[in-house]
Image 1: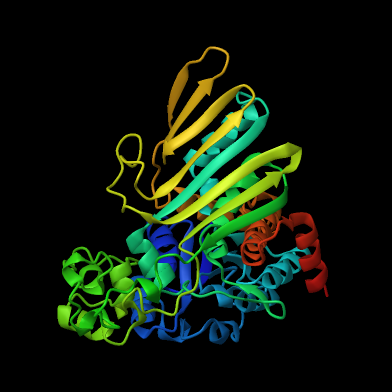
Image 2: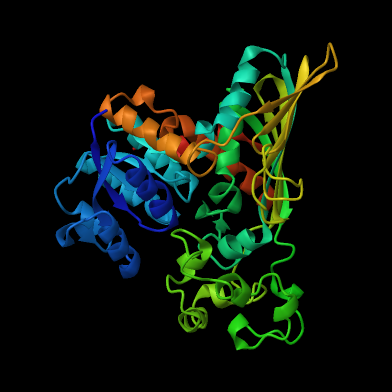
Length: 448
């Protein structure tokens, strides 16, 4: 394969951990030749790692895109609200774009980019890594083999640890969403986190979702649950610190060393220094130093989504932000059902396929009543090998200039996003949403 040059917009956790690591691991396939990142420390660190000259280091994606095209591909690893403007400008410049999920922060933004990719010869591929894992590939092979017969119903669960919930969706960048009849909907958790899961359901079933309903709330991480006498910040001498699992001191200061302060980790994202004094100083002004019961968050901490797909297939999806942290992987994946991760059971007319833990499948045949255990393995790279797999696929599609080679194109990933946005509207309006009608309305509204 020919080495392909690329530019990176957004050298945060995913930029470093996915694109950066891929370029280090496969230097014969990818070379990063420019970087745009508003955080000076992360920008300069990335530039040193990849020997990027000063004249190719930019504070913003807009600044990078004001220059003549610097490479064939652009990796858009920015915050969700920048996905639409950066991708639109990059395609206008002639870049093929790898876009971190979600497509955009609003359904209208998704619609705009859908029309853009339909009317362009550029490849726009989504960072939907689950499609590229050996785990979900095996699931799809079993479904397509006919061993399950006709699929009747699916029960699917995604749970994240309480520390992940507190970091990303209470204190962090994905803590707030907005909704009104005038401005539609922006940044619900079901989109920012679980668009992965809506997408994988569509990909596995190869069918469209027809109806969706949803329920959920911000039950725990709000002011009414704040302990009496607790300060607004964890750095202000909280009397509950010794018994609080959400203490910013515990999560971001204690035990942090040069050895475990890895690129992309939550502790690194909050403050790159391993000096406890510097970390405390950061928490005194950073959103990550706030008490989890004193934040401006409004996204749900638990949600259920009920879906009806074509051919009368019903699916129930549950999200929870209250799982235990993963203790690591054994031969069959995480050891406890209480740990964070994805689990599901698929009931068919000929058999049942379940995933009690990630990486471990069990198939039960209705006819003979025996259960077969299937180990799918843990390939190289994060997300079960999915992160490296999707970059390999994107670069192959670019090398051959063939959009059909892209296995998670924006066009193909659009429907899963519409399900997620429809689910949140259902939750907020307490009504059943007709997904095809909702999708058609968005596409008509954004067609120029």
